[in-house]
Length: 89
View 1: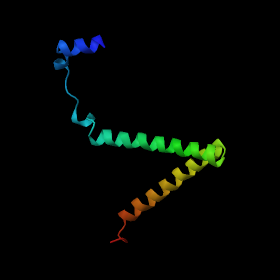
View 2 (view 1 turned 180 degrees about the vertical axis):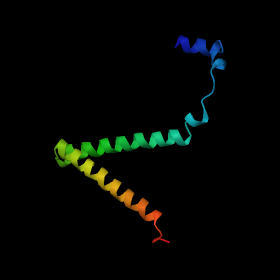
View 3 (view 1 turned 30 degrees about the horizontal axis):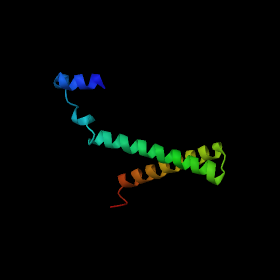
View 4 (view 1 turned 180 degrees about the horizontal axis):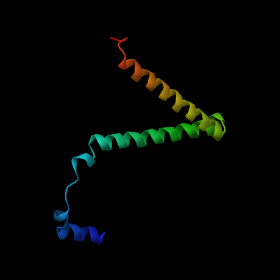
């Protein structure tokens, strides 16, 4: 506590460079990082629900997440390929 008070009273904060706009709390990079952490917490919550409430074994929960990852990659790949071809236009 005293270190913080000394930091303010001695005006040591003036010698610190401001945070770059890339690393500011409202930047795209930090918003993306926040979304990634929220996704990981949601996955953790789903894993807990599947193992504790539904009764799926831990390995089964991991297998479900692995399959979901594979299928989402497949769908994203198909969509990206469809957008590159002329059949949509």
